[in-house]
Length: 221
Image (cartoon, rainbow, N blue to C red; front, side, top):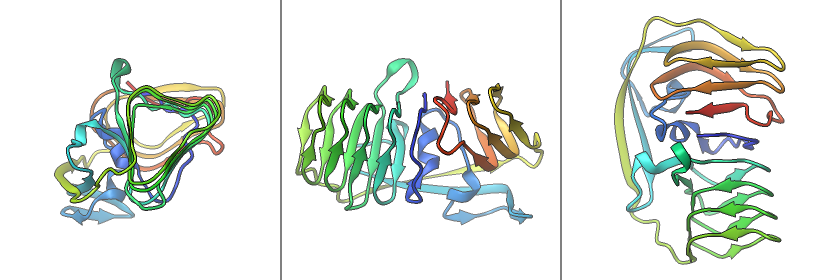
């Protein structure tokens, strides 16, 4: 999965963004119930997590889920492994905004969907509202404007957070680094730098990406 210029929103559930790559980013911040213990803001032991998704959409197909509205930034690219189509979901009535030159697979919007200029949806759009295209935007699949999001299906699972940490990681400007699965403390990616993750389970106490982000600050392969 390749990430480029994703505009972050408080309503976005970042955990869902890494489910498709079997990675758990920021898991401690996304759980409904903490089974383990908390020490200095971090969690150890087992953690119960949950997300809600539209009917017929499985958790392994969701690349990014927002509890309310979703704003996909300019030039964002959200793709699955080897180009497989993944789904981006906005569960809130404000709907979804896909900005200029963004590229994604399927789009689910519980409200209107607005496409920026030259944006590309390689899959289909399932919206509970209007779909407004931008100049030279393109949708390869179908567009549904009366998609029923109810009832939402709840997906639950449990992860075990390692006690041992690999420590803090700071990637300086113009540097590129790859991290293996495991637990980390504070991870900071500075301007013009990138962080590559492989398939596996990742646990970050904090993850800081550049704002505005670098062309490809975070990649999951």
